[in-house]
Image (cartoon, rainbow, N blue to C red; front, side, top):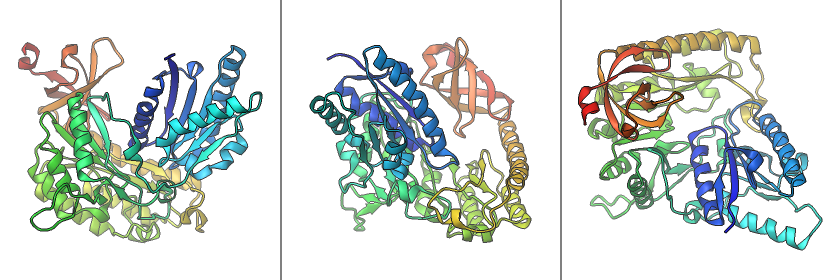
Length: 462
């Protein structure tokens, strides 16, 4: 079979990274090998994210560049099929074909498993309608069948692997498009997840991150009838089962919602050594008034109580979060409440953004939109506090020995990049044979976004 080239640009979250990897697996049996250069691509796919402002403009800008490369390839006797997948594709649908008629495929995050079928259809069109541009295919429905049943088995994996266990969202936060682009919450059966995790470990994964839009809303079908009659398992019990896999050294999960935190998951952090002591738990705001307007269905006090329950169960646990600044109607008092919540929690990491209107969401139609200059001023103040806390947390690890999983090569010769249990980046020059291993590192220096140190002599001699 002639070797063909596939280019994928991935925007956004870990869910999209996972989806892109599965697209690669779907097209590999059709003779496609991955390329980093779109100019070499027989198929170029933009796997898009719709969360941030101007997502559509970024996509159309990248499509324009792909169009130029498509034309160059055609001048040289080749062709390029251009596809748009992900959440922008789900939201825009036919509009993408209208604005960019050179796009051949538009498909949502729940239909990418049909890629081989779409490509076959395009090939038939091209054969039957020679000299005409094939009609663009738009597939953005929410099929009843599970896409996971149609995906090809994973045949390779990085040391730190992603595994999707839950998709969609039923929360309908007023600022968020996910319920409209990813659909309703769906949880995969426990047996399927464990089987996929076992395969990842057999292929070399040492760490698995369990993924979901609301991962702790997981409620998958139990693999067997339990003594108490449970037909579904929550995330805590699933993690207990995954932790039994020989060779799996670390388990993580993201992203969580405060409304779905239960005692079983808290107990899992207390009892399971391979479950990392680091939780990404978005709060978005510290103001109860804004949280209500966001339809978060929890208060700042509720959130703080969850934090305390985790710290009671595991003293050395650390947290990261998401914050939206300048939500419609946010006042100085609301902003100060957010700052106070940050001081009360003390984060190891956090992500913060100015609010941006997402078309089709209730918040986009709200009055009292906050001026951009006010948003920027508030964001700068919040990020200053968060950065101070992150640096302080990193400095608190100086003098300690941390187990670091080195999972990729760095920018410099001989440099490897690893991460501590707390997701701190560790760049260090070590023997390449330690790539993919967990190595004890004595932390000697701390910076805003990383820590540095030396590996223990026993690791060098091993």
